[in-house]
Length: 633
Image 1 (tube, one colour):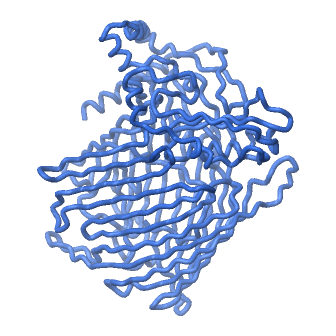
Image 2 (image 1 turned 60 degrees about the vertical axis):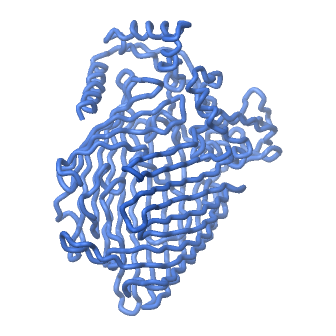
Image 3 (image 1 turned 180 degrees about the horizontal axis):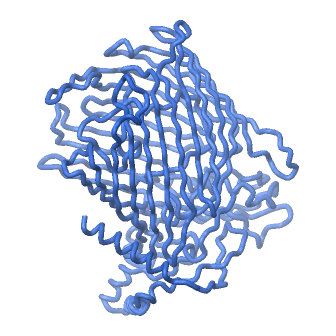
C-alpha cells in the first residue's frame, strides 16, 4: 500500500510543480504523420526537468549508455532515449469519413504493404529498428502478420475504383483487429495522378503469445496459453487448464479457436468443461463491419449443462443445486440500405437496417416450469449514422484510437412459441454520441424491452436500462496530461422470472476490483463511476507511467417486492493505482490498483490490491446486427 501511495503523491507533486510554470514558448518545428493532411506546430520538449535539475542527470545517463563497457551496454538495454515522434507531434482529432475525399473513384494502381513486427519498431518512425538484445529476442518468438491477412481487411483492390471512405474505414478495421496494435493507410501523394493512386499501408503487430501460470499448492495449478495471431494468419486460440481442484471433478478446461475467412466471415469453436458447468458451441458470423456493408448474418449452435441455485440457503448450510440442460440454435440475417443524399458532393452516412432472427431453445432437463422449450422470431428495423474520429490518450495509452459518434434508433418486434403460453416481445433503443477535442465525449443511451402475454395482457421479463458516458478533453500541464471520466448505468428489472440470473455489481458491471463475500445479486442496479487518469512523462525500461484515481458507487435492489434500487444502502469503492504501457512494444496496458471497499468485500479489512489488463471503459458502436431482447446481466 505504501508504495502505491508514494507513487501517487510523486505524480501529483510533479503535476502541481508543472502548474507553476508559465510562458513556455512554442516551437515551430513540424512533424506530420502519414495519414495527416494538415500541418501543426509540434510541442516543445518541456523544461519541467530543468526545474528539478534532471536534464543533467538524463544527459549523463544517455552518455553512459553509449559506452562500450558491459555496464554501458546493460544501461542501453534498460533505458531508451530515442525521441518519441508521436508524442512530439501529438494527434489532433480527425474526422475519418471525409479525410480522403479528393481521391474518391480513382483507380488503385498499387498497394504497398509494410508489416512491422512486434518489438523495436515505431509506426510513426519507420526508420527505427530493434537495437537491443531484449527487442531482438522478443521478435525471434513472434511470427509477423502476413500480407495476405492485411489484404483480407482492406475495402479496396488493385485495378478497382476507390470507393468513398474505403481508405479511412480500412485503417479503422486494421486497428480494431486483435493482432495489430496500430495501422496507417494513406495515399502516396508523390505518385498519385488525376485518375489513379498508389496506396501505402503500414501496420505494427501485437506480441500475440501470452500465458499464465498460477501454482495453488502441491499438485494444484492453473496453466493458460493464448495466441491472438497464430502463424501470422489472424487465427486465435485460448486454452486454460486447471488441475488439483478441491471438487468432485479435480480439473477444468476452457478453450476456443477462431478463424478469419475472406469477406470478413469468422468461424469459432468453443468448449468448457468444469464441475457443474459444461458447454460447447460453434459459430459462423459476418457483422456490419463497415458503414457500407450490405449484408450480415450468423449461425450459432450451442449446448449447455450446469447446476443452478434457485433458492439461497440459510447461513451455514450447503446450497441445493438443480441440474439444467438445454441446447440452442440461432440464425439471423440483416440488410443495410443506403439513404438518398441531398448533398451532391457526398454520400449520406445514414443507413436503414432490416434484420430477422430465429432462436430455438430445447430443454432436456428442466428444474422448474419456468424453464421451457421455446422458439422465438424477432425482427428489427433501425436507423444508424456512424462517424469516426481518431485521437490519443482516451482508453488506451498513447496509441491511436477510433472514437465512434452518431445516432442509433431501433425498434424490435417478436413472437415466442413455448410450452406454456405464446408471448409477444416489444423493444426499442435510442443512442447518440458527440465528440469534440475541446469539449470531450458524451454518449447517451436508453433501452426498453419486455415480453407480453396476449392472453392476460401481463408484461413479463421486462428491462429498462440507461447509460451515460462522458470524458473531458485532454488537459495539459507541461509534460503531464489527464482526463476525467464519468460513467452512469442503470438496469431496472420488471416482473422477472425465477429462472433469470439476478444482476451483479462486481467488476465491470459495478465496482471495479470488488468481490463480494457472498453471492450478492439483485433485480435492479444503479451504478456511478468516476476516474481521473494522469499521463506522465516518466519512463523506465521503455514503459510509460500513468496514475489512476477512482471512486465508484452502486445501488442494488435485493427485495422482490421493490423495483427501484435507490432505497438500499449503496456499496462503494475508492482507490488509486498506476498504469503501465511500453510505447515501443505491443504489450497491452496493465495496471496495479489499490482499492478500499467499506462493505461487502471478501476480506474483513475492506482493502484489496489487484492487477488488471482489461480497460474498465469502452466505446459503444452505432452499428447493430442480430435482433435481440434487452440483455439482463
